[in-house]
Image (tube, rainbow, N blue to C red):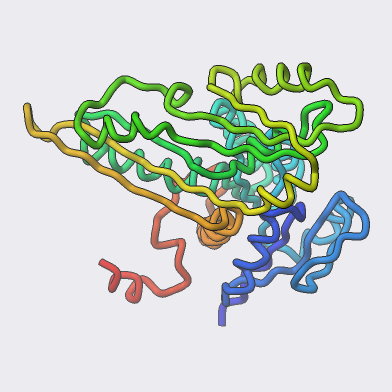
Length: 324
């Protein structure tokens, strides 16, 4: 009988807890340990929690690490460090830096004879794959992606890293007028910046200057710069009372023609009560695929475009073909 895949989780925030839940429902994968930089962390499942400094002691006990840190400050460094000793998968979501992250991990993983899966989740991730398929099926057209309304984990994390910010949540909100234009056939050449609003709910540190924090938010490259931004300052109690959920979702739309004057519209919608739990479910499925590719002798860095879809499921190829 084939042994179960042995998994470690690095970090213990919302995404890590989602991965913990997903692994508990996955019969062919075992969560061995969780690694945290914080002292005194206990896991909800009773899984042992160790210091990140102890990771190398688990080189023969863990097959793949799910990296659950933030894209702004953690994942590029952690993937490069840990990818020398383990197969790794992350949810890196800074689109502007994905190619640089890929090149680094291609070198690290190839030299270590490991696989590194980067930028998995739903965007980048599943939405990326849909954009690729839509482009192939409807080459005469244009892709549009709308995110929200929901809380972006990456943008919220970027907010919390700014000086003067004690805590924060950020909602990405699509502007309905642009969605309706596309659905009605009057597609405009719109950018992500103009078709989305970013709502920031921020708890200030004691003594922080609201004007200075606002300026830092609006000028943060790759996250808020160039967008319409609303900033609301509130207390920690108000944030926890009114913004404790983690909803999200979005749309992938491609508008084009199959022949002159023959219109085609492709639309996918995702609606989630829990962004981190769904993202974690995607990552766990692709961790399985990573180990299948590693078992075939592959090494290097792989994005969602490189992975055979059948590798995501634990069933046999014969069973999977029943989904056709």
